[in-house]
Image (cartoon, rainbow, N blue to C red):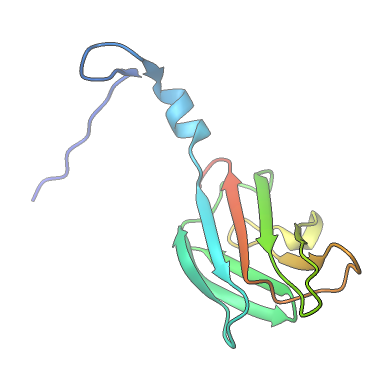
Length: 134
């Protein structure tokens, strides 16, 4: 089977309206996202895109590994988490750091309680990455 290629500058809906340039599609699309079940004995993806595996480093510290690497370490990350403590407190935060925490093929993320800043296993931890693939 021969591979095919479609080359276009602009996409439009079926009525010919609502156009968007391909640069916005390529540059603006998430290159990786993950919804992590961090409460499980072995943390695992509830759902994901461009994730090959997840390393459980320590309590509240996870390393998603990408199926397709990023072009460099200058990509953008966004994250969040959900958690409820036994005493009814809610809230958690996902933290990323630069330096050795970012590589082109993985990212270290940590999940903290918002009231004590202790690392926790959240019910869910979510991250999204935007940037250029290699």
